[in-house]
Structure formats: structure tokens, C-alpha cells
Image (cartoon, rainbow, N blue to C red; front, side, top):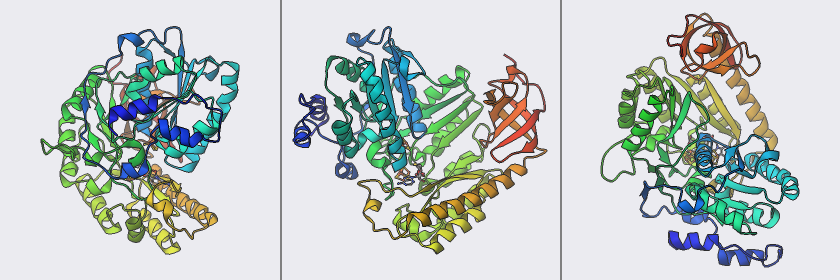
Length: 509
Ligand code: SAH
Ligand code: SF4
Ligand code: F3S
């Protein structure tokens, strides 16, 4: 089925939503659900670069006098997609609201990474039912990674009839059409393409702040780690052209942004899909380094594609920050093999060594999964010993969560949940211990802080982040907000540092 057909079929909505019985048959006829099997066979489907996004005349003013609210779950990728959707809403005439009671359209931009992420969303969908009953004119939409899952779409169709729209991660640019259809139709509008995804440029964006900005450099993931749903929900790896990225970063720099985070599920695979040139993340970073913006980060790195040239470029420093998030997932080579991470403990350690040699100030953070199917006590201990050896600054730690359709979900698992929980606790204890030790090292040091605003707990105090993403609270003039200032650290806490300003902000607005 080609894209056009899929689109046409998915836009047809059933007229008899209430009859639960022949439900699935009926939907199969009119709606092609996302297929995990298809997603795994990465085809030769050509990636289309579309550069002509426009709000078509027929949709102009669609949102006049109306308000929208987007609730975002999941990673930075989703946060940034929310900014794009907010941009489209704004271009259609809607204004943003922070309260559900006020909103004319509510979107849930969902995450499918673990079961508890999905449960949260289903809880929220349930809560919204009362609101929809009170105000039938309210539109409720589900988008993001969960809507790319067949089982989720089926569950919403069967059990949550108050949802008006479901659309996938490849369909964000179609938001004007989807909204317009939802206003006209009494039925649920479903538009999910299980195709591998295109690259759409020119999308409007309503960025959340004026200091830090996200820039997509690539979409999708082809790594197929055995536990992970992302390659199915986000399509195949496809890179934006360097000139588009550089143009966007330049524009952000010119409009005063101080920190750029380059985004991708596996940024180290950047450029591997270009057929017309050899160009990778190292090349891109080497160009972005020359742009007049104070800080540049990137996330997320996959250890497998982290090449020497990238390390060489990062070692040049300047605006390229010395903090690298490098998910390891496990310290056991056997578990890494079952996870299909395509590196072992030794290779990861060699990479860490290379990075530390080239960038002696580098700090590393990581992601770890405990309780992967059949993980033994010894294998778990290897994760602990590796954590000690690398001395990560901090880590996101998770209990393995089976995701339908992934290879790991089919593995027999003999590790009881209590054991998994105990392992997580033990790991977290070590993570906290090493973080606390690393934070202590800051006492008495002067660090550069990008000031983001007033502290949440005390408006008298300013808050910002160091180049290594440590939260710093200190007293200083409001004019320092949006600037990078030097702060002397007076006290280290578990998750933040207290300090005092070592000098006035260099530039005062
Ligand atoms: N692209 C990134 C990770 C994105 S998901 C990378 O490859 O590093 C963020 C983190 O969620 C992963 O690093 C992993 O630690 C965790 N994760 C992914 N799938 C999971 C699952 N099924 N159960 C538990 N944690 C999972
Ligand atoms: Fe998931 Fe692995 Fe891709 Fe990361 S690299 S998004 S963990 S499949
Ligand atoms: Fe979640 Fe999708 Fe991101 S599954 S972690 S929102 S890519």
C-alpha cells in the first residue's frame, strides 16, 4: 500500500462506533493499523524531503477565538514535536492555555517507552471523559509514540470513544487537516502512517523558552535494541540536510538563544543515510562550532557509532560542551548481546577511555536498564562494577518493561519483580553515592552558569545550569537571566549546587 492509499483509508471513519462486536473486523477494512512487522523490515522506501509546508488557505482562521493545550510525555523529541504542533496551532489562530477547563482542543503527546508511561496516558484519557461530557465541543486528540502502536489505537477505539483524533508521529504536519476533519466529523479521526517517515522542513515552531532551543538533526532509529519500541514508533533513521540544520542554528543564535541541543534518538548515526556524500556528526559539529552561540549539546549518543573524528572535534571545545550522555544499559557483555546493543563492556570502556583522554574534563551520564530477562545476580553486579569504574556523574535507571512486538518481549523471564526492584534500589544507591561525591568536588570552585530564571522555590534566588547540566542556585541581579555568569559554589547538595555570583553579568540587557 502506498502512502496515498494509506492516508485515504485511514481517514475513513466508521459510522457505527458503538457496536463492539464486529468492531475489529470493521476497522481492519477501513483502517490500516501500524504494523510492527512491517516496521522491522526497513524497506528501500525513499525518504522524501518536503520543503514546502504551508497552512493552506482553507484552514486559515480555523482556530480564531479558540484555545489549545498540549500535554507532553516522554523525551526531548516529544517536547520538541509539541513546539512544532504549538507553532501550527498558533498559525491557525489558536492561543495557548495552561488549563484543561479553558481549552477547546486538548492533545496528549504520548510516550510508549515503558508500560508506566502508557498507563499515565490512559489515566489521563480517562480523566478527560468528564470534561468532554460537560463540553461536547471540546476536541481531544492522542498523538506521539503511543499512537504508532496498533494495540493502543485499538484500545482507544474500543474503550475511549470520547477521543476525537488519533494521529501518529509521521503525521504532525497534517494537524490542520486532522483538526478540520475532527470538527466536521462526529466520528474518531485516525491518521497514522506506518511508513518509514519523511523529513519535513519549514514547519512553524512555538519554542518554550528564549534561552535554550532544541534542533532536530535526525529522526527515527534503526538500531532495534531488542527491548525498545522507538524504531517502530519513529520510523527509520533519516537525517536533515546539514545546510537546513546550520541555517536553523544560525537563526536561533541571531535571535539570542544561548544554548542549542541537537536532537536525535541516535545522533551518532547522523548522515549515514546520505547517499550523495560522506558527512557525519563530527563534520556537522565542526561547522556548528563556528556559529556564535554559547553552548551546543547533543543527545542521544549511541556508543556504537561514536567515532574518533567526533571525539577529535569535541576536543576542540569552545561552544561544544564537555558533557556526554552515553547510555550503556548494562555492564554485562552477555546482557548487552541479548539487548543487541552491538558493543560489549570492553568496547564501551575503550570508548570512555578515548573520550577522557581527548577531553580530560568530560563528564559522562548514562541510562541503565535492570532486570532484563534472565539477568543474573552476577550480571547485575557487573553493571555496578562498571558504574564504579566509569564514575558516571549521574544516570537514568529503569526496570526493564516488556514492549509488545519487540524481540525481548518474547523472551522467557525468570527474574521476579521483587528482585528487579531490589536491583534498581541497589543501583540507585550507588548512583546517588557517586553523584554526591561528584557534587562535593564543586565546593569552592567557580563555574559558568547559564541563568534560566528565578528559582522555583524562591524568587529571590536565580537558577541556571553549568556546562555539565548541574543545577546552580545563587543570588544575583535579574539582569543576569539569559546570560552566562561565573558563580562560586559554596555548598553542594544532592541534586543541586548553591553559590554566589563571582562577577556581574558581562552583558546586561
Ligand atoms: N536512543 C537512546 C534511548 C532512548 S530511550 C539510546 O539508545 O540510548 C531512553 C532510555 O529508556 C533508554 O536508554 C533505555 O535505558 C530506556 N528504555 C528503553 N526501552 C526500555 C524498556 N523496554 N524498558 C525499560 N527501559 C527502557
Ligand atoms: Fe531504542 Fe536502541 Fe534506538 Fe535507543 S538506539 S532508541 S535504545 S532501539
Ligand atoms: Fe517515548 Fe517516543 Fe521519546 S517512546 S522516549 S516519546 S521517542
